[in-house]
Amino acid sequence: MFDLVITGGTVIDGTGTPGVRADVGVADGRIAAVGDLAGAEAVETVDVTDKVVCPGFVDPHTHYDAQIFWDPWATPSSLHGVTSLVMGNCGFSLAPIGDESDAAYIGAMMVKVEGMSPAALEIGVDWDWRSTADYLDRLDGNIGVNVAAMVGHCALRRTVMKDDAVGREATDAEVAEMQHLLHLGLEAGGLGFSTSRSFTHTDGDGVPIPSRVAADDEVVALSSVVADHPGTTLEWVADGCMNGFREDEVDLMARMSLAGRRPLNWNVLTVDSARPEDYRNQLAACEQVAERGGKAMALTMPILVGMNMHFHTFCALYLLPDWGGVMDLPHDEKVTRLADPETRRHLEDRAASPDAGVFSRLTGWGRYRIGDTYSAANEGLKGRLVSDIARERGVRDFYALLDIVVADDLRTVLWPGPTDDDPASWLMRQAVWDHDHVMIGGSDAGAHLDRMAGASYTTEWLADCLRGQRLASLESAIAHMTDVPARFFGLRERGRIEEGWHADLVVLDPAIVGADELHLEHDLPGDSPRLMSTPIGVERVYVNGTLTVVDGANTEALAGTVLRSGTHTETVPIPADA
Image (tube, rainbow, N blue to C red):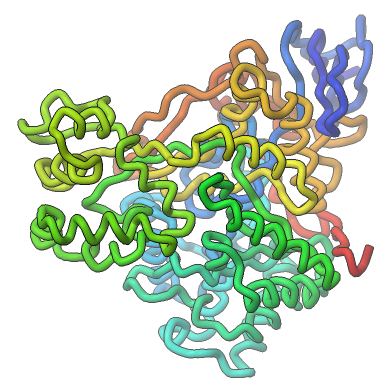
């Protein structure tokens, strides 16, 4: 007798093979049978005729480390079919911490570097843990999705070195102490070690985060710790992830993988036909790591992530070359400078320079659409393209944009139209998706909540495959978001619809599956806002055989498992070990 039989659907099992008409029987949280189950006895039978049944999606790059405490279902990811996720990426975990000062530092860092709401962190997180083991234990039995957590470099360094973590390199004794803490975290089930060397990452005081201060040898020493723990992995982000890898970065990436005897993934590979050499350089870097016996996997998104911008608070525009000197000024001075013709010319020129790197995709000023406005001068502009407004006014697109922003005292909501939404870029992405060193992911879900909305990539890509550009088959897209990441992380018996495997399942309507338009919701603690996109056509989601989502809404079931390394994961060999 089954607990559940899902009958009448097309089963796409996650392996990339064509879908087949089959029933799925579930018992004790696992897939007990796949095939013709007509007449089988079950506690519940669900008819999903004309629907697709596939494995739950695996998101390899999230930052739900804080949100999971007030939102154990990790919305909106779970609503879009994600049943397993990896958090603690980029060196940013909330454990270990040594004392309250560490908690205050880590919290302020997450506000700055990951765009988390300070009010939500203050209200929603009690910081009542010290070790990684304590942190993971807090999640047991209290989550609605399966969660794996990396141990972040910044927390390790801060716990050991306190304020010196951002001021100097570590001594041998301090590195050994960090290694000990990492050993304890991995023994408790941490998935692996993550770090950041990226110029984009600064802490609450505006200085480089702790991991950026570390010597290369410290990074390698910490990476070596994972070799002693089965089912672990490595993750990092560096300058080269945005702008193309330098030789020293390729060398460090290889040293990390070889020292840890584990694969490494990095975020995020951006494909832009205007800068084809950048992504080719990054793929070549992964190939060079493989030639040395290691393994490096690039994460890439199959959609263009929706985002908004403001000139009054931190966003990606601040990272354009030489823009920080203006954007970080006190408010009134910034308004004055943005109205100044010389400043405008300088900012426009620098944004168009090769130094802009990956952020050049934000410089299609005419493609920006105006959101909410706040002045009489901007009345009636909401929803209009800047290029149309600029033509009417007889000025350059960038100048029209700044005129609007200045008139609103910088509060204008802007919706950028990326420059890389062109046929050539999409054809390049199509080729990249099947590259041996590329994996779909990089949503950053749980971070940059009022600026970016990557959590809906699963349903958005399926919609594009079925009714949009159709650059991938439905079976291929599902495989890329289920079995591929599950195998990369060594998730035991997850990522496929296969007898004996965990019943993480999604039932979706292929005729309408997708995601609604982005909108702001004030549903975080402290009434803080976040960008949301409502799923369409996601009828049911099961986590470990328990129904967790029905018609786009959570059931409030807490059926998730903390995916502990070595217990719920197995070691994935790097090429040198294969």
